[in-house]
Image (tube, each protein chain N blue to C red):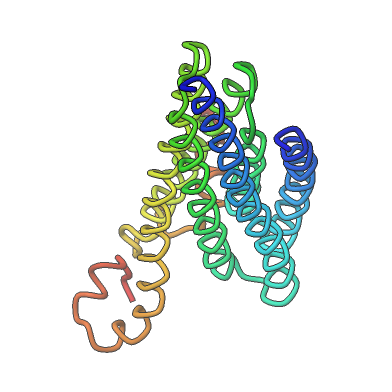
Length: 117
Length: 139
């Protein structure tokens, strides 16, 4: 009975991974913003990881799932922090040209070498 | 006699663990499939980032519910006397699930707050004099 459950959840976790990839691709195509697409993908990947923990997993599976969950939270936190700082940079002091530009301009400025005019 | 009762108890607990874990897995699978369908619907109908937030909130609620079931199964597993190896694995899995449940709860609360702020935003903007300062807008 337990082995059947493990087999079913293992197969379903593969299906959920596929839905994660498709959902992320759709979100990226629709919004053209990587942050929400990555968030959606990571949410569904966590669901797949939880399904893999059903039954009696070995140490390797536990370690991999724990690492994925921790990484997922780290990436989500980084994305939220980045979004907040970009919003703050875009809205803080809106009458100044350099700060009121959209995020793409801000990223361009940050990536541009200092010696370029 | 005592050994027989212990064996019987172990069998009953094992069956209960499988049932509760199956319930948790079913909740997670249904949540993932439901969220996927909603993502498709929202993505193809409304092409805006804001509409993805309620869907993520729904998925987070399903995941939290599934985790509650799985934690209940973990608690049931401790009813029978396991080996140190099994205790270690159980502790690691329970730690992952508990931490995830905690962070999911925080994320759900934050996303709910965002949705409520989005709903209240337009009406506040017209009446609330501090809205200008909060949003940092210059206009």
